[in-house]
Each structure stands twice: as C-alpha cells, then as structure tokens.
Amino acid sequence: MAAGSARYVRYILFAFFALAVLYFVSNSSPVVPPLKPITDHASTKGAESSGPTKATTGATSSNGGSSTSAKEEKPASKKVEFGFGLDPAEYPMAMTPNDPGWDDLSGIKPGPRINATFVTLARNSDVWEIARSIRQIEDRFNRRYNYDWVFLNDKPFDANFKKVTSSLVSGKTHYGEIPKEHWSFPDHIDQDKAKRVREEMAQKKIIYGDSISYRHMCRFESGFFFRQPLMMNYDYYWRVEPSVELFCDIHYDPFRFMHENKKKYSFVLSLYEYVETIPTLWDSTKKFMKNHPEHIAEGNTMAFLSDDGGETYNHCHFWSNFEIGSLNWLRSKAYTDFFESLDQDGGFFYERWGDAPVHSIAASLMLKKEEVHFFNDIAYYHVPFTHCPTGEKLRTELKCHCNPKDNFDWKGYSCTSRYFDANNLEKPEGWESQQD
Ligand SMILES: Nc1nc2c(ncn2[C@@H]2O[C@H](COP(=O)(O)OP(=O)(O)OP(=O)(O)O)[C@@H](O)[C@H]2O)c(=O)[nH]1
Ligand SMILES: [Mg+2]
Image 1 (cartoon, rainbow, N blue to C red):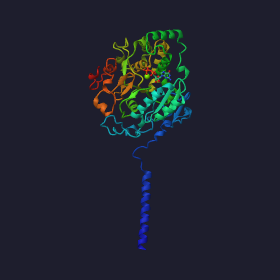
Image 2: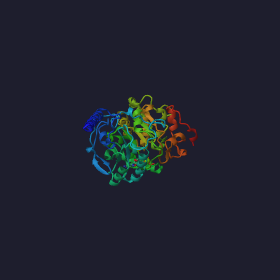
Image 3: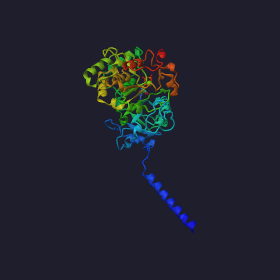
Image 4: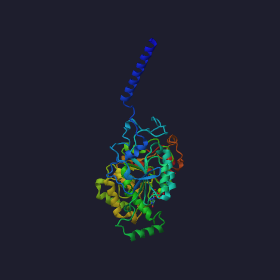
C-alpha cells in the first residue's frame, strides 16, 4: 500500500515536471531569429524592389528546368531591408581570417540576404561557355548563398539552355526575352551613315567594327538591361559573361558588402579603351556635363578619367564584363539622362561605343569616390586579362589558384594604378614587383 502511494506521488511529480517544461518552451523567445527556409526566398523577394514598377512581359522563370510565367510569382507581403528580414547586426560578416566564422565555407550561410541577382546576357549557343562561368561562381561563392540568376537574350532561350543553366544555379533562375525596341536601331539613326562606318571599321580591322549585333549588345548593356521586367525585382546585380573564371574563395557576401558600405559600382579590372571605337564619346560627355551640372557628383573620380581636369579623356575604363552594382543607381534620373543623351548623339552606331566606357564615365562622374569599389579579393579572368590579388598572404588565405605573374593590375596597359592615385589609396604590398 505504502509502495503504491509512493508510485502515485512519482506520477504526479513527473506530470508536473512535464507541464513545467512545456510551459517554459512555449513562452521563451528564441535566441536566434528563425531563418526562412532558403528555398522560399525567391517568392519573398519579389516585391521588395524599390524600382518603380514590377513588369511582367517577356519573362519566364524556371527552377529545375520547368518554366512558369513571371506573373505567377508571389508578391512579398512587406518591404524589408534584407532578403529575409533578419537583423544584419546579429550576423556580422567575417571579412578577415581573424573574424569568427571566416573558415566556415560549408553548408548554406545563415543570415540576411540582399535583394540581388546575377545577370547574364547570352545566346543559346553560349550555353557551355556560360555553364563554365556559373560552375565557378557557384563553387567559390553562390552555393552557400543561393542568389537568383537572370538570363537575358534577344531571342527566346531554348529548352537546353534552360535545362543546363537551371541545373547549375543554386538559386532561382529566370529567363527573359529582350523587347525589339531595346535591341534595334532607334529611328533617328541614319542607316546609310551607320553602314559606311561599319565598312570603314571592317577595313581598319577594328575588333567587332563591322558587327551590328555587337552594337546592339553594347547599347543594351549601357541603357536597358537594368530596366528589363525581370531586373525590376532586384536592387543589386552581379554581371557574369560566358567563359570567365574565379580563382579564389569568396568568404563574405559581396552584395551585402556593397549594400552596407553604400557602394554603387565596383570593378576588378580596368584598362585603356581602343580609341578608334570612341572618338567622340568624350565630346558627348562634355555636352552632357554642360547640360546637366546637377548630375555631376561632388567629390567624384574625374581624376581617373582625365589628366587635365576634364578637358580630354585618357580612355581609362572599368572592364564591365565583371560588375557588381546598384540597379537603383542605373535606374536613377542621373544615369538614364546620361544614357539618353549619348543615345541621341548616335555613337553606339556611328562609332562603336562600348558599355564599359559608358558605365565607367557615369560611375566616375556621377558617383562620389567612396561609392566606387575595387574588389582586390575577387580574382577573375575574362580573355585576355587576369586579376589575381596582389599579396601572397591574401592569395594563400583565399585558396587562390591564379598565377600572380598573370595579374594585370600594375602593368602598363591597366588603369588600376591611376584609380589608386585618383583616390589616394595605398597600393597593396608587392605591387611594384608586378609592373611587368
Ligand atoms: N543574346 C545575345 N547575347 C549576346 C550577343 N552578342 C553578345 N552577347 C552577350 O553579351 C556579352 C558580351 O559579349 P562578348 O561577345 O563576350 O563581348 P566581349 O566581352 O566584348 O568580347 P569577347 O572578348 O569576345 O568576350 C556576353 O555575355 C555575350 O554572351 C547577341 O547577339 N545576342
Ligand atoms: Mg566577353
């Protein structure tokens, strides 16, 4: 009998204890804010863009090869500064090997995401070249961050292109067809004059000098990629071209770096433009500066572009096949006024203006010095130039596989040295020994 009542007392105590544990669990707040499952983020991102409209035409999205209309994407319910609404202060980024979490390169990185996407302009025939680029970006960075990827084309993407690329990208993939008016001659262009120029450039053997499609490409990258319907969903972009390489691990989120440090444009390689392709670009720029002094930033980097205070152009530009930048800046009145003014002057067709000098002139004149960033730690190759980080310690820490001898930064035809001088920046240790 005594043994029986002791058993009941034990049952009651156990039940009381279980109730107490349940009460505690249901009322305590979590130490770490809950992360949304990573696969949800594309639908959350949809309406966060601070771009003016969310357009839907000519675009399909795909994951795992199946295409759906962009219209079907779920809108986000609220605007949050970061992708998942997480507080960045709770997830500091490890920027150096001394910071906690630096060595953790496995699994999905917890923490906030930026409203950002990779973007690639490509033809269906570029599929295997872009596959190489995607694989490297995924291996060195995006497999842990799962950012989306937008593909744009002047023709519809075929099933094979979508299948191959969507199988390689860890984020969501979207495929957009460029409208005709963004990939054709504007009405004001004199076709005979444009044809004569192409013939002359062909005779002079100027690279892509006789190409119409290359000109459409340069005009599109200068003035339209950032306002395609699919791009309106994002605030930042990272441009990727076919057959590029990344040589070092990327330990932090460059999109988040751009956002938190108020950077609007970035580069890894810079060089002098082929003069024959832009003989009157600087005249057009000066006309624009005169007409729109309100768009010229105080504390800009004119010194990168000109050695005589703006009278002449030294032809320096950031190489735009790699860019991480702010879409909202490109969509700003300042930038679009600049593009419209250049487009009216006709140099995309009467000469062969490239999007690289156009973006670079805009960034150097219309942004403050501090808004442009040089990513020394992102090692990169696009035929024929390599950016391999200066400094053996850094290359070892980042597990780089580029040959430091190939680093173009400090060689004679690079403008990176000028960029450092224009910004009064100290060049990284070891730069002198890489000058030739
Ligand atoms: N859809 C489409 N994409 C194009 C076309 N021409 C070029 N592109 C893309 O535009 C980007 C720039 O073209 P590229 O041919 O790489 O030009 P480039 O970098 O100046 O020259 P390369 O040294 O040949 O790489 C690449 O992402 C190409 O895939 C085109 O006619 N249609
Ligand atoms: Mg290229």
